[in-house]
Amino acid sequence: MKLPPGLMLAGSASTPRGRSLTTQRAIGPGGVIAVFDEPSITIPSSPCLRLTCNYCLAGPEVPVRACTGCRTATYCSPACQKADWKLVHKGECKVFKRVKAEGHDFLPTGVRALVHMLLRTDMAAAVQEMEAHTEGFRAQKEEWRDMELQALAAMHYLGREASPQSVNEAIDLLCKLQVNSFNREDEDTGDSGIFVNPALAMVNHSCVPNAFVKFAGRKASLHAYRAIKEGEEVEISYIELNLCSLNSDLSTLRNNPSQGLLSSNKDLARLLEEIYPLCSTRLSSSETSENPTAVIRKKWQLCEPLRAAQLFAIEPLPQVMGEASIVLGEREDHPFALAICCFLAITSDAFKYPLPFSPSRLTGLLMIANLLSNTAPISGSKVPAATGSLRERIVQALSEMDQATMTQAILAIFVRWAPMFHTEDSQAFQEGSFQLRDIESLRGRQKERELIRRWARDHNDAEAQMFFEYAVQKPVDKLASFALEIMDAEFGPGQALLTSR
Ligand SMILES: C[S@@+](CC[C@H](N)C(=O)[O-])C[C@H]1O[C@@H](n2cnc3c(N)ncnc32)[C@H](O)[C@@H]1O
Image 1 (cartoon, helix red, strand yellow):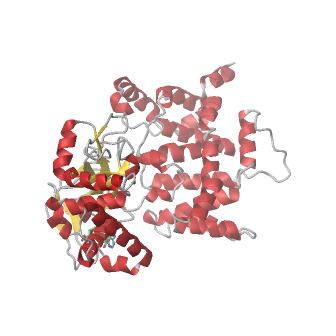
Image 2 (cartoon, rainbow, N blue to C red; image 1 turned 60 degrees about the horizontal axis):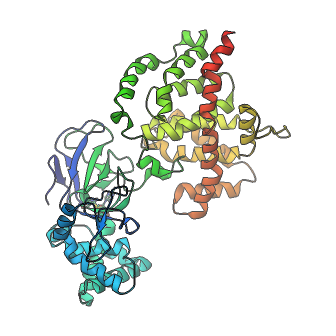
Image 3 (cartoon, helix red, strand yellow; image 1 turned 180 degrees about the horizontal axis):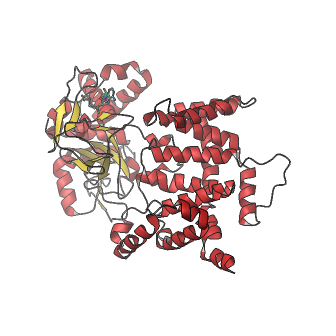
């Protein structure tokens, strides 16, 4: 197997996790471990087929023209069209024409990927070496039947005979696709698709990965989450770990809207260098006792360019907001402190620390859980209007939330991830587990307890997902939506005038 420079193949088919990849040199956090290009299968998903260049995957803003033969595959340039023709489209074009002739629009993404596997003879030897787990799939009756149908469709549109042997070989390739392909989310465009590369397919899974994969064009790159030693195994997570998190829109995590803004805006980058040292000193105990509000006010004003550019995950902005939430919490202004913590959890922490078990994210969750338990409305108290002052609006919003469910779900996320960093007897883990058990034992909450447990266990459980979205993520988003207004009201320039009078 041909590997990119810097990587070595370890293990074997007989070792418990099969083969694996190890590094030949030490890599720093964020460093590129290796780049994987050809030979690869890189295809856009079917809904993106006519909006994306089928070779370099540029799109969807890039103008593309359809192949005059099949009128299905599109390309951004004659060079891409030529390269794809030579690579695979010469055979695929006939497939697409047959699909059209039978009155269909296009083939499902999985069948197209199989057609590529069958046409790419240059990859046959490498594909031969891939893990298939065929017997495991055969035992899953429904999945197996689906694969049979996909294999028959591919053979039919390729104009090949569907003998028992050829169908079995095609199913074997589908199994290999299941085990080894990547759902490719393009770093620049967010478009999805499939990526298969025999060398990248050697990376094993870990729930505490030290690396992650990025896709751009026809390439994939493997990056280090943390420092990796020479000779250490490289491991990625096969599952989207942030499914078990407070972030409701994972597409923004995969494709950060502000990505690249700082590198393209040199003035902002320069300004940041000035702001950073002025804000990065944490509130010292003397400042806290003097006038912490005034200190935060100064820092918040300095952060204005970051806030205007919506760079909420770029320091020193999150640090200043974190300090503001502590000062508000110390003033026992729990609703305001809570709103800021919710904002930081979803707009800053999740971007700064992509892994949901990063200690800073875990601490943030515990803070939100603690603040939530201090903001439950006192029964019988009057609920203010939703159109009143900032404080009235936030109290009104809180009155419509089920704090117990939110706290329970947030603690469930904490307890799900905390053991990755804390030992089970660490104080933080004990505290979170104890609080969770406390809420779980409340009477009359069986339904909520069951749904939260189901949600934490199985992210494909549609009912539990919907429950989590409406009972937890949307309320957290709502609370977070007050945060910038709170910062302005408490630490904005208008506030300085009021206190100096
Ligand atoms: C993409 S392949 C990775 C390379 C694989 N080890 C090989 O030898 O081909 C995925 C397969 O590797 C194995 N694997 C990967 N990570 C694993 C893990 N953490 N525990 C057990 N098996 C693992 C499983 O058999 C899985 O289906």
